[in-house]
Length: 243
Image (cartoon, rainbow, N blue to C red):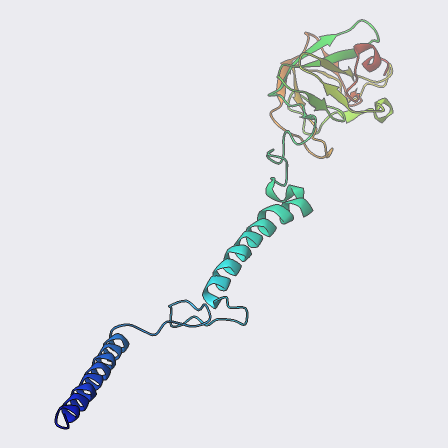
């Protein structure tokens, strides 16, 4: 009995040592094959660090980036448009500058037809009529600029005939101007017979001419002198012939 006890003790001791050795080997294998589990809710990415609330910077930064992107889009397209509604609109409403920017523009030889006729009363007068042949309104500004034949200067304008408003012609409507051919009897200066009349149209600015002119044949026997004058454009023939 005394011999058995030592062997039993030795065997028990060996078993304990074997168990400890196996546990140590397993622990070493686990340490070498996989990383340690992050604590306190951190993710497995080595660059992430948990904040004080247990949320990783990676998740928080991702959400913040998404939110900032939405805010930037809104302030560019939404807030900016509300502060300046015309910011995305053409400065001129889709219309090209120049002709067509107002309700109408100057009548020219391209938009109207014209006639020149002799009238019985008042004497020594012609009646010039222009009619809008286009599809949109045009305005007969100021007075027509007239040249008889190859005259070097335009016919003078009767300033007393200036109307209260610009004459605007809807499609198919007409404007009128009367032409005084000569002055009082006995006042004929450089009188001659004229054969053609060139009509130039005045722009809104009142300076120069605009568009194509029209050339008309005068009634046979038209006699004019240096006192010839033309009225401003009028809305009716009777108004034009008052001068």
